[in-house]
Length: 231
Image (cartoon, rainbow, N blue to C red; front, side, top):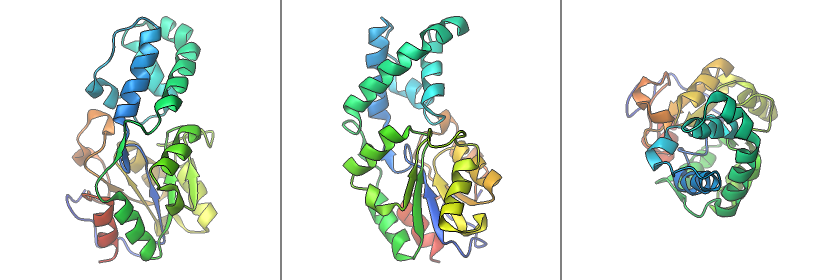
């Protein structure tokens, strides 16, 4: 990985696949409110923001299982999972976007990528029913030709299926596509698909340093990514 820059071998990029949580939008505030509202219904103590942040990024099902596992045995997690998921989804939809904000230079970066002739897709492990209204609320949805959530396909990141679908949608080879995300799941999916992959340093990544991610570089912002791809 190259810190602060990207490899000069990345050429011929015609599309970028951008992650959502931890890459474009800091949504940890929404997670904090929704998860602790669910936990309150189960008479469980609230979790800290750091604890929740380290669980985000692998999809809602995994998130809720980890949240319940803080207090319950494996058998109890299975017993309470469906009710907890319904509660979490209800609370999340009620606060979606209210406690979140864009990271610096996100709109500017997306615009700069488009100005380079690079087509954009958003691929997130967030359920599509959460992702679409959030992108619309933050005035980002118009940048993307396609948007896929964690429940859009049988497999989610780190599986390459969603990324390969974008390549097919755009009629591009994987080596013409770069992914930009904050977590190892983004990089693993990109490597498996044969895409290039860049990492932003400010997201979640399950509490692990981004320097440990096998990507083609760390870019401080989406705008920096656009400038690097244009260099």
